[in-house]
Image (tube, rainbow, N blue to C red):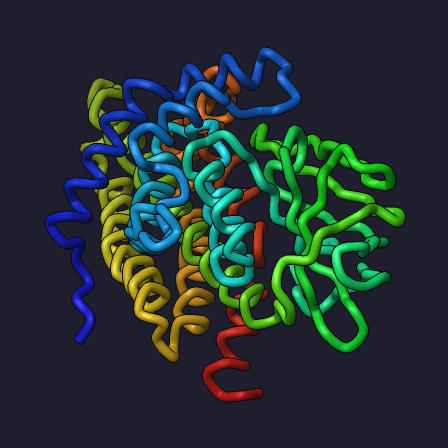
Amino acid sequence: MMALVPTEAETMLADAARGLLDRSAPVSAFRALRDSGDPLKYSRDLLAKLAQNGLVAANIAEEDGGVGMGACAAGIIAEQAAHTLAAAPLLSASLAAELIGRLGSEEQRRDLLGAIMAGELVVAVALDEAVRHDPAKLATVAAGAGDACTLTGRKTAVIDAVGANRLLVSARAGDTVRLFLVDPATQGCTISAIDTIDGRNIGVVALDGAAGLPVGEDAGDAIAATLDLGRALLGAELLGLADHAFDATVAYLKEREQFGRKIGTYQALQHRTARLYARLDLARGVVLKALRAIDEAAAEASLLASLSKAVMTELCRDVMVEAVQMHGGIGVTDEFDIGLYYKRARVSGELLGDDRFHVERLARLKWEI
């Protein structure tokens, strides 16, 4: 039976990552970056520091020069990064590495994976096309043969698209789905930033006959597996956000006084926080089980990835609503950190499918509806 508690090595990784992020990427650094108006919306210096410590694309296999720690390690890092709202393209690095590792030629893996892991190359993964996440909707088409392919279509909600060194774009090529590597500077490729409430780098990619280099052949299975990885990593990120908001709220309840007593002494608030604590504790097992299932290539990996994303999207939303309410008026001010976590949770909950999408997907996977 799969253990639902972290191993000693996983606990050590979490502690090391959290320590580095607390020192190098406090919430104040995120605020400063947001307020600077930098269109990149993440720190290349932070990315380099994380890379130096082996915290970028930890899922790259050892045979490709990576640390080979898998989805569990990438999830642990995502969870810890959420605690400080670390402004670094960690999710896109893990997704790009997964796709290249599964589909890339030996030359592509050699040239790209090492640079991603070193923080020298940012590769944005462009898969979604619908207003809401729907992998079945794929209208982007590829024309041509061999290395002389051109792409036409439009991709939405592309994480870290602005300023990316390369794009990985899915497209239909005849009866198959394929993946292409695109230079954003190439003619026919236009990237427009989306102004998100959480200050994350997300863009729209428009392709009009843009040149693309094929990565592998039929990419359908690799894309499906990579989406599951992304959902599990977002589940871990949402867990980190919820954990931080819960801890910050409990601390506030212990210090805020109203009517001559600490508001944390009121039983109604104690009951509300106790319920959230119990749900968070149960959710940790769901997130960890999904990540482990992906590492083990288990038959239920897709189902567990959707379960993790659905559970954490709903739970994180509930935690954030309670956190803002228990903070009172200051909870809705930009000056207070809890609002930043609320906004990040709203966006992360939508990426790669919200809870409604994944509940429906769970039903289809479980009962083959």
